[in-house]
Image 1 (spheres, rainbow over the protein chains, first blue to last red):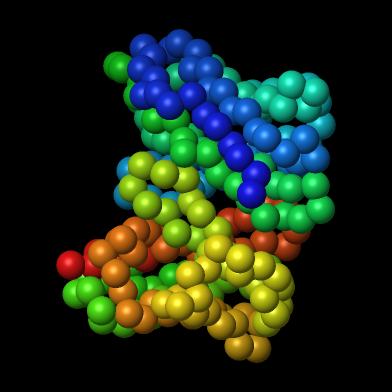
Image 2 (cartoon, rainbow over the protein chains, first blue to last red; image 1 turned 180 degrees about the vertical axis):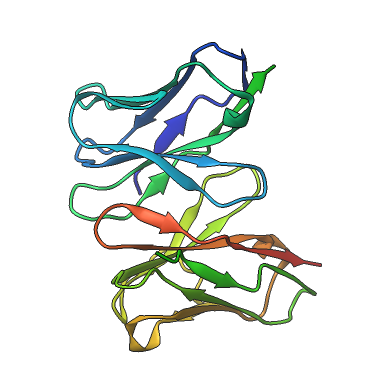
Length: 111
Length: 111
């Protein structure tokens, strides 16, 4: 079973600031990495995925992957109150598409 | 494109009763997953289907949980008999390759 650890939070940031979320994983062979957003009472919604080392940007979101350190992060720039949610990090294995999830980090953006 | 459909959305039962959940994946998605998400935790994979075959059910409590995917499309997940600790959200997801898309979930409360 792959282990995925996220900073426990909650993380409170002022509106307009950068929210930084971290995730580490135990399976060195993990190939694909995902960030899902989950609003309270709703199901996970895919925000971004990243496969290669480095940064990947999509609008206000940037995912960063460092396979050598087994570390993946998500930056949310210009945070908005609508970004207030739990963010789940998920990783696949070396040879399959099964996802292992972290427990999530709850972000609150203060207006 | 229609998303993953699940029903019912909510279910309240007493312990030792049985319950069934239904999932219809995104059209054309061969892989279907059932997850259990307990409050405050990330989703935990229960079972994975590829078409109508089981790929992984290693974390399915087989003494009380069962699942099937007849004809490789819709799927049902059953719990019999239910225990208090089965109270959770049951999420269905589907995928073409590694990116999984989640349905709205079924929130189960066992009293």
